[in-house]
Image: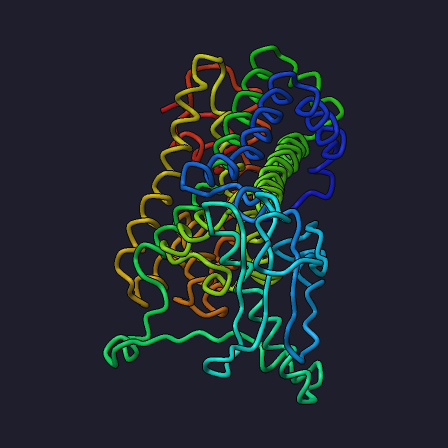
Length: 437
């Protein structure tokens, strides 16, 4: 596998030219704009379909009047602080009493009355309003109750740190001993959802790239343009430049989609209840704690995506150069797609076993490991050592494919004739002479 230091001559030129063409393409621009618009609309549409309601209608209280008939200093102004549920509401002490509140408030106003009950010597919180829907006012009563608790603890001398501890909510969970002993952190639905989601990203990345690379190479061969380009650009430099350019474009597309979805979710959360979306994901077993989402997870996903992309892109380049006319594009593309789908289907099928041995095997087998290894690592089915070994095996496959590509690519670019089969390409790698099969 002796490498020629000049084998990649012209890679930069091909990269710049190809990426520029991708970015200038009207079809790509329109597709990108439409995709981003759909992503930005996804969260509000999903929230409304799933039953999310407009927050302004739920918590739209304009004025909050209060009467404090206790010895405690209750911080009612905290109700309208930035980031609070009633942000923007005007909070002020009432200059009227409870008996005539109906003459002093409007439909979107509320009167909060806190007093010591003379009957049972307990504190009473009353929220008075004129609207039939009491949802917003129930929440207001809950918030006032919290402020009253804080005021009582503060009156007893509690510090801010102690208040944080005292007012922190806690969760109660009960489960059977058998469930606890199983120690199964991820169910089938959650594991399948993670595998399916990651596989979709790999498919988007590879399918688009493979199709473009194959079509581009065949177009250049059919137009004889490749013969002109090879005067100043080496064959490997040409395909590597194309692969890297398409990778940069598609990775940028995926990042744009991810950012659009994130922006959609965050912005929607300002004016709509997005809990139906998060609850739906939780029902599938998907949450940040389960997936251990963080810098390490992102790095693992990126390394795995790059390795998978390089593997399938080199296969696409070889498939494209084995053809001589545009009529053979679909056939060449289908051959690579079948390999991609083999890895996808096998990795999805293995999720159902929930077995450590199966997870290890799937993470180490070439092609399948592209889809399976990072998912099984995130789900905790394999160790980092197995993941690293999987990466090494994938890198070995890429080096072998690159070596094979270096042996045959120059001759395949000049080849004109029927589509070459794998046996003929192997023969070419050995003898440097094309033998059609």
